[in-house]
Image (cartoon, rainbow, N blue to C red; front, top):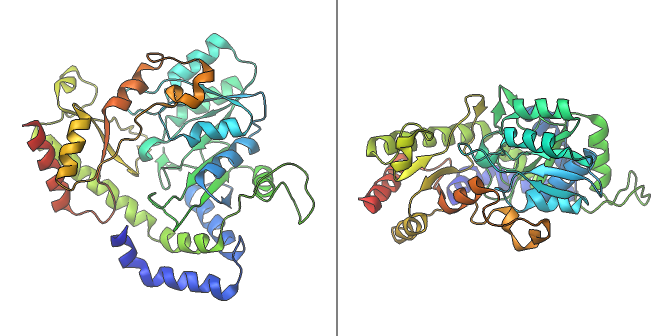
Length: 378
């Protein structure tokens, strides 16, 4: 984070000073400008700035029509907010297993579940664009049309990603983005944004983020204080001018990892072949329709936890996204899942490892990471 800040420090401080001079600290012109710019980037009709990615998920779900008593299908292999936002909307999360290649929500299993169980209260499907790669939005679009359900995108990790040339955030009826400080496009604190293809949904989300109030001191429903700070809007506008370049650098770094891992003999060219299962590392699959933004560069590793310790000893950071699938979290025990119910997600939780990935990463550093992993397995 320091490397990025050093390059844009003057621009950021000028933007913060602009807000301080204006004395307009909540919403206002900076946030309104950011909303227009994010809508243009994603291809959505409108965008609604808010206080966090979690808040954006709740706004997107409620605007899409999710209400108490409904159910929403989603993935068990995601950050907690993907499911907790469903609960906050009063609905029940329905966890369906993930695709073994991409680890995104498996559209075939979703269709099978709907046809088998025919849930009358199913209101929406919430696919997550995991690690910066869009889920199979062609398949989910067909399910939405056939089954009359809304698609709400969890695009928290996918700003700038596309599917068949269409931006994440414009592929469902609503979508949610996070600007947490480690995201590709990051605030200097908490912030998020919800996008939609429908003007009436945007108006509803603006009402919800301000205590359900269409105008001051008049409340038409129970909303929440979910407004974005103007300083976050201003900082994000500075960074938004760089996001295309930063995402392209991430793709370049991913290609460098790919090349070096292939040369090392640690991975196979395809994650799906029987031969690949004998390798120490397995890459995740990449959909040809998806333009990946590599919020994370993730591999599946044998002896994953031992490898993490080895890398840490060499001052190489890594992380596990995610060590316990959502259906096995204690808070969701009431749903009745047991270990073994969603085996692909459970196996992935034992194997995934995110390696260093940020725009300012150097090729020498990537080389050091790959060499260190080769040393561990040698």
